Image (cartoon, rainbow, N blue to C red; front, side, top):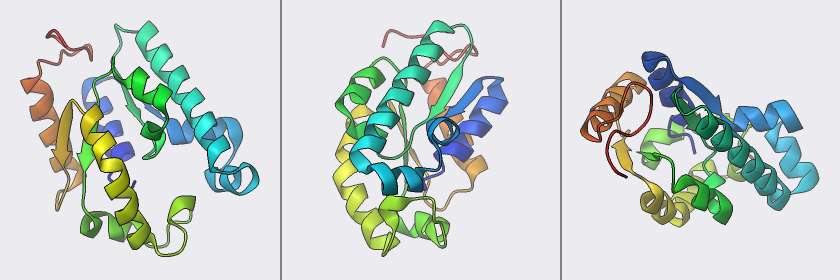
Length: 175
């Protein structure tokens, strides 16, 4: 959460002429504000909605394989086992951050219901809980500490070149 997934994803997509999809934005467009979903339906229902959206956008991206697509997932999307299975066939990037990097981004942010209250303490706990999943799913880990979005994009570009990513947004090696 707050690692820059949407910002970096959008920039890498623009740089390559790929489509960009933010699953949180898709949820808001289709179901309303995320804090309201959490408040009225609870986290389990939000996770079900999120998993459905992720499945839909990954399926759409797969059908349009000739057009590269960057998909930014919400930080908790990987908690759903079906999403984890779907991500096995995708190139997954983990934007690795620490609390010092994300804390300024969390100040005054009311759009993250799980971080209500002590955002820093909660973020650190969620990071400890989720990090093993992020690392297990990741094909690339990009350090975002003390880096501007442009530096993170450059780091990601270098990683994509090392994995032989093609301009069409597909892997050029056997994965």
